[in-house]
Length: 161
Image (cartoon, helix red, strand yellow):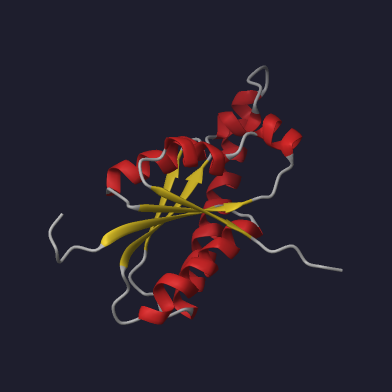
């Protein structure tokens, strides 16, 4: 890497408040204080699930349902991207690159790290317990073990009652 090139940071986003918090946290700490010259080139990546993986079971009637599921997934992706762009604009980060890549989030993020030669991947933590994590899997855990870069897992603070 040439000395003038900035290192790449990837922030993973989905439609959860946890990933929105992680993006905002990252912008506040790594980009806003250095608005004129941030230390990283920022890529924001949304992994859009495939329609067939969202349905789970393919059987009779699936052909009629798939186009509707795909349309919903495109709408969700557009909403996620718009929210990320708006957050970047409010934080005066105007040169972030936003990508929507179809596939399982675990694979999409690890492949994005390789593609962009990222030195850091930021993911939000959903705060699942052990059982839910075992059933659903943990994107952050998978990335921490498989991404070839530093992985920062940002946890949203719990509200104390």
